[in-house]
Image (cartoon, rainbow, N blue to C red):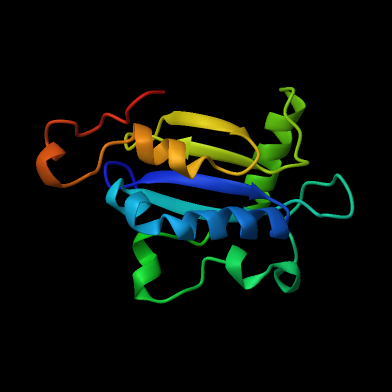
Length: 148
């Protein structure tokens, strides 16, 4: 995805991920203009503190990345969910973050971490800070991801 998309991983319970995806859908056009590709990652169980991939039967449709061709530039299906779950568990163990409101991780176009935090991804802030990938800013701001 490097140089083609700004990946944002949205992790949480199936319900938290679905809510964040619903919010992203509300401003989808602006997020797509900025090259954001969202990876919904329902890895927390709502009934306990274990970090592990949620069962596919527990995942609401809004939290899944299955969709038509129009979704290919907006949502991506997470691969190796067990490894993602282990990575988030390790990050939670080394920080003061908790999984109770979900987590997000945003990458720059060059693959470096741009932002991360607890709660739903701040889509409106991303729109305000990240330049579009086409139009008059294309070329001039390639690789820049706005305020970090």
